[in-house]
Image 1 (cartoon, helix red, strand yellow):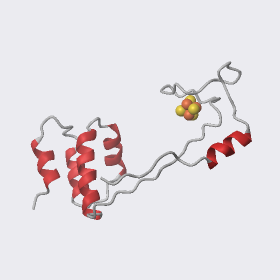
Image 2 (cartoon, rainbow, N blue to C red):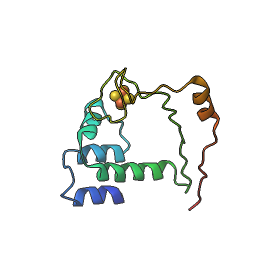
Image 3 (cartoon, helix red, strand yellow):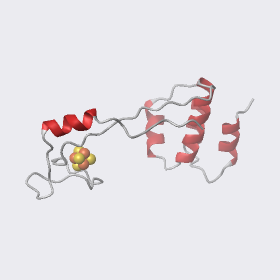
Image 4 (cartoon, helix red, strand yellow):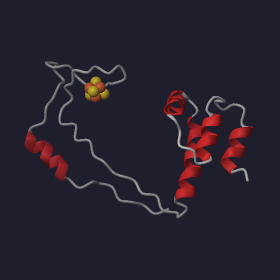
Length: 121
Ligand code: SF4
């Protein structure tokens, strides 16, 4: 029996055709080899990947419960020497907008409760 996602993937010509066989393999439960994973990482077709991932998730966990990890990035400094091309956050050492938080301030941020409460929908 064809799954809903597989049907949608097969019928949508605007999708990235190069990843469809890979997504079909994933939907059939195959473990993806390295080259397939690289192809997925290079594809702009997030919608098809999201649809496939969502179907696999529901197969594995059909119960209507979704959990997330809430993480906190303390950002104790914006001084960095890596200069990633996409980053607008870093300041090079010695820059007037560079900062390093004192340890006490970082610890205070760690202890601060999250202003976030889970919602049930
Ligand atoms: S993302 Fe920004 S802060 Fe992080 S390593 Fe790259 S340049 Fe540094």
